[in-house]
Length: 302
Length: 244
Image (cartoon, rainbow over all chains, first blue to last red; front, side):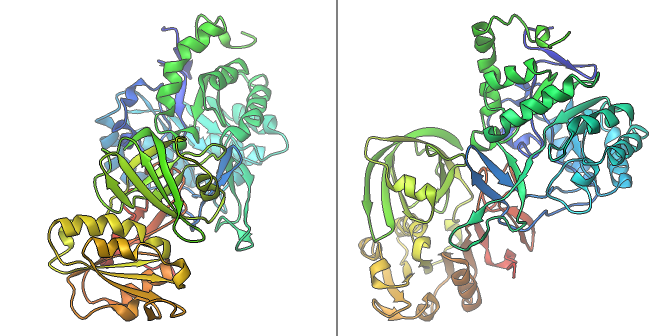
């Protein structure tokens, strides 16, 4: 294994950097900017059973050191992802990709995961039970340990690929949800999804977002994310993918030191399309500065 | 698209709250009038998209209205200061649709992107008619610049303090081959209903990334979902679906 390589659910990654779902499309647009094969992997746009436009606009708001989004899972639906998006991706990305899946019922999750299970390029299923921007689904599965476990069991029954459950921070006790997912057979966890927030437009005296509330991401959430990764990683035996405001090689090292097996980078891609490339390139020098020989040695308590 | 550092050459007020900013940098990725750039400002997380007003060699002109924190910070920047800019964003206006007598209709802060378009169209030797609409005479800008390009310029103001009283639609001539327009959405809708030819409509929406990754600025069209930042900001008349 190389100096930067890590392992995630039995699959080796050249480095721990994974662009987060919803900030990297289906990859090929970023491939026009740089060779995306230098990434560890990436998590593609949250995919649902049926095509979705998402929520009304405005669905973006700027925040101190971050942003709100209430996009609401715009995606072409799993059939078109398989017929159109994945073949396009295969032309510019030769590594296993993380398939991000969302749903509005346990059956939805199982259906979409079963469809994606047949795709050879899908290395992991990242099951989003934490989207704050959809009603009657998404986050409601991630805020209740029993509901979370029911999604895990349904998905595990239809796939042989590693199943990573993406958790919401909008709960009292993330560890109880994490443990419920582990007990139900999850192969890994990823966290955090965005934190619910809102902003008001002073001129109109109305919320900026048409959906009123949206998910906060960016550097503002980094300390919260780091804390939750640390709490979760020490409570479960399955790997945890850390994310939330990671914007530099140093942030990434903090996440790994807190117990993350790999790290997703989200909002940073939206203000600098080359952010992930820069983080990977900055990693060796940052490791040198802190006397880190390789990333494998960083896992606390191992 | 590229991400480069631009240096501010000058900044001046055109009206009480409209500013003209000239910057120097790599403009090579800006290929069409109607495209925009995305500015990264110190102290703000998201970039701020602003349409290209003019382009001459390495000099980029942006004209923007003071509306929020981003434009306030921008208005306080001085010559010599630098800012990171993503350039070459959006589809821009298609000059090949112009026909023999293109008509350009701009309202308020929608006027700036039409300036580079007018210049490019004039370079092809075509007669270019321009209608510029403002609320009041005090808010008007750039009419002399369009005249200097050799355009036929009609002015309208809501209060009648300059040019014809009323909205831009009152000044639409009898004879034109294609309409290029940019302005507030109610104006675009009125233009849409008033014209008899094809039209290129430039839209504005709150954006996240500005280059197609976040899906923040999506809209519905006759031909499917489009991202204002990538498949837009210019949509063709026949594909527009008004949201209300």
